[in-house]
Amino acid sequence: MFSKILIANRGEIAVRIIRACNEMGIETVAVYSEADAEALHVNLADESYCIGPALLKDSYLNMTAIIDVAIATGCQAIHPGYGLLSENARFAELCEKCNIKFIGPHYSVISKMGDKDEARKTMKEAGVPVVPGLDEITDVAEAKKFAAEIGYPVIIKASAGGGGKGIRIVQREEDFESALETASAEAKNAFGNGKCYLEKYLTDVKHVEMQIVADEAGNVVCLGERDCSMQRRNQKLIEESPCVVLTPKVREEMMKAAVLAAKTVKYTSLGTIEFLLDKQNKFYFMEMNTRLQVEHPVTEYVTGIDIVKWQIRIAAGMEFMYKQEDIRLRGCAIECRINSEDARSNFRPSCGKITLLHIPGGPWVRFDTAIYQDYSIPPYYDSMIGKLIVYARDRTEAIRKMQAALCELVIEGVQTNTDLSSDILAQQEFKDGTYCTNFLDKFLKDYK
Image (cartoon, rainbow, N blue to C red; front, side, top):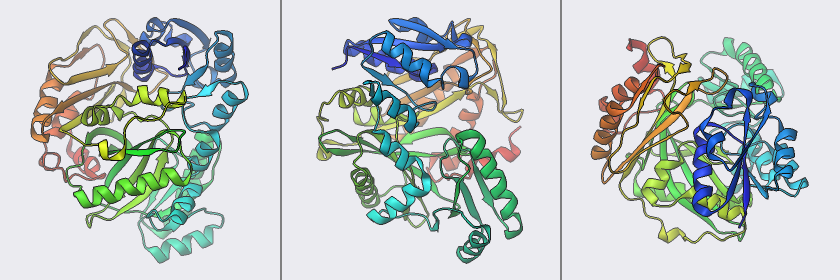
C-alpha cells in the first residue's frame, strides 16, 4: 500500500480523498493555488504546497508543478479526483514516466475512451448498443447528408469533450453548419481539439450510468446504476440510485454491457459507462468517464462499499474483494449538488464570504463539502460548493429525508440553489421517477 499520496485537486473532492487516506493510514500532500490558501483541503492534508496563481492553467492544470511537488515530497501516487487532470492522458503518462502511480486507468485507455468517436467505434465493435451516428465529421456535406438520413434533431459533440462543452443540438438543416462551427470552436478552446462527431438526438430519454470497478487482475464488477437525468445544460443537478424506471431485466442487460465495455478496453480502476435509456427501455452507450464521478456517494450508500478507498487499493495492486453476485442494491440514495449561484437570476454565480453555515444531520445524511463558516468562495472555479446526500430504505422516505435536509441546510452570505432543488423534489415527475433529461428545460421556463 502507498504511504504517501498527492491529491491533485481542490474543493470537496480533495477533502473526500484526504479523509479516505487518513482512514487508511496514508499521508497526504495537497497542492493549492494562491486563491485557495485558506481552503479546507490545504489545512486537512499532512503537507500543503502552493503551485501557482488563481487561474486553473497556472495552478491546478500545471502538470510540471504538480509532478515536481510529488517528487520532492516522496509521494508514490497521485490521485486526480474528478475534472481538472483526471482524464488527461498526457498527465497520466507523465506520472508513469516519473515512476509515480496515477490513481486511475492507464493513459492509453484514457486516450482511447476520451476520444468520443473512437470510444463509439470500440463499443460498436464490441457489441455494445450505440446511438446511430457519424463517428467523425470530416466533411460537412457528408455530415449534413447523414443528418438528413437519420432525421433531425441531431446533436454535435466534441470528440474530446466532457462537462457539457462542445455540444450543440441542431433542430434544422439550415442551422447545421453554424452549430458545427460553434461546437468545434468551443471544443478547441476547452480541450485543444476541435474534432466533433454526430449522433441522432434522442428526446425524452433517461441518462443512466453504470459504476464499474476493475482491478489489475482482470476482475470487473458493476456496482449498479445511477439516474443522472436531472440536468441543466448537460450539467447534472440531482442524482439517485437505483433508477426507479429500470426493470430488473434491463438493469441486468445494462450491467452486462458495462462490464463488457470495460473488459473490451482492458480497463482498470473506477469507471462509469453512461447510457441513454428511451421510453421503450432500449439503451445506448453514450460515453465512458475514466475517473471517479461527482455522484459516487449514492453508489456507496446503496452498496455499502467505499469506492474511493477501493480505487486507491486497486491502484496499489490489490484485487477487488467483491464478486458480481455479491452486489445488491439496498434502499435508495439521492444526491443534490449545492451550487453557489442564483437560480432565479439566470444562474448567476455567487461568490463571497459565508457568514453563517449550518449543516444538516441525522441518520444517513451526509454533506460532502470544503466550505466552512467565514470561508470566502473564490470566483475562479466551479460553482459547486457541496453535495448533500441522503439514504433511506425506500425512495419515498429518501425524498422526504432530502427535503428535510435541504430545509435544514443554511448557507448565508452567498446565493445557492437549495430552493430550486427542493422545488424539483416536490414535482410529480420527480416523485414518480419519470423525469427525463429535458425536464429542467421545461420547468425553468416558468421558474421565478
